[in-house]
Length: 401
Image (tube, rainbow, N blue to C red; front, top):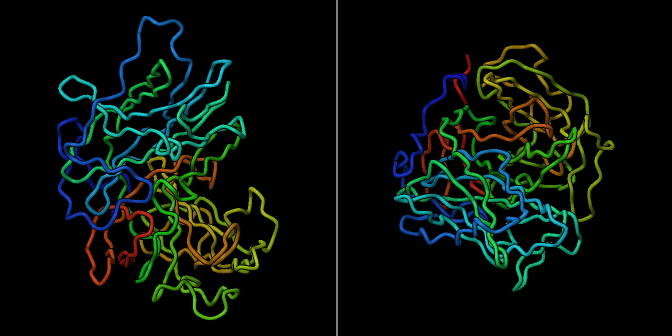
C-alpha cells in the first residue's frame, strides 16, 4: 500500500465541462441531507446585486476550507461550509442561497435553497431567537453569524465545476461571496482502519451527522476536525450487540483490531483510560470526567506525511501496541476497539486531519483502497472511494509486511 504522498490519482481535472471518471451505477440514496445535482438541473442564479448601491450588503461570506470532490457509489460529493457574518447594526433576513458556477459565461445555479430548505442548512449564532424560518426568511441578528453546511451530490453524468461562488438573497439586495476553487488534488488513498464484515459507517460523511455539524473553537479558531470522520461500528443481523447492553463485551465491534492505514510514524499514544459503561435508556456517564486531554480516550495518532494525520480514538484499555516514534506499515495492528473517552458504545472513531489533534485541526477527506458495499442481498465492489453515512460495508485488510 503506497503512502499518501504517492497517491492514486482518482480525480481528473475539475475544469467546467470536463467529466469526472466514470463510476459504476448509483448505489442507494445519497448521503443524508445532501442535495443531488443532476445533469440538466441547472437553474437561473439569484439576480445580480446592484453594483452602484451604497453601501453593499454588509454580509461577509467566507469558505474556510475549499471543497474537494469525493467519489462514493456513483456520485461525487462536495462537502463544505459558508461562514456568514452580519457586519451591520440591523438584523438581516436571509431568503435564498445559491451555489453558482458559470456556463458559457453566464452564471447558473447548481443548487438553490429557500424557506425550510435554507433553514435546515444554517446554524445561527448570536441570538437564541434567530434561525427561525418564515416568509421573511431566516433571521440573522445584527452582529450575528451563521454557518451554512452545504453538501452537493453530483450524479456521475453531471459535470463538476472548477469554481463556485455563492449568492445570498435578502429583501431588496443580494450579497455575493468570493469565488472558491474546487480542489483538484487527488484524495489520499488509504487502507481500511478495521477489517472484516458487517461494519456500519456511523456518523460518516453526510450533511446531518454530529461530526459534520460540530464546529469547535480551540485556541481562538473555529474548526471542524471531524468533518469527514467515521465511527466504525459493527452490526450483526441488524443489532450492535448481543446480550447485556451495559457490557462492552456484548458489542460486536468491541476488541476488534485497529490497523495502520499507510506507512507512517506514530506521533503519540494514550492508554490506560477505563472503558465506559455503554449508554442505555437509563443514561450515560463517562468512567472519568472528560477533559480536552482525554476526550478521545485511549488513542493513536499517525503522521502520514504531506501534512496529514490519522487519528484513532476510543481504544480498549491496555490494547495499544505501539509507542511514539515507531514506524508502522499498512495493516499493522495498533490496538483494539474499546469504549474509552467520549464514547457511548464501542466503536473506532477514525479521522484524517491537517494537524495531530482531535479537535484543533481541519478534517480532510480520504478514499479507501477497496471495500464492498452491502445493499439488500447484493454486494458491490468499490475501489478508491469513501463510503458515506449509513452504508454497510465489508473491509479487506492490507497485506501486512
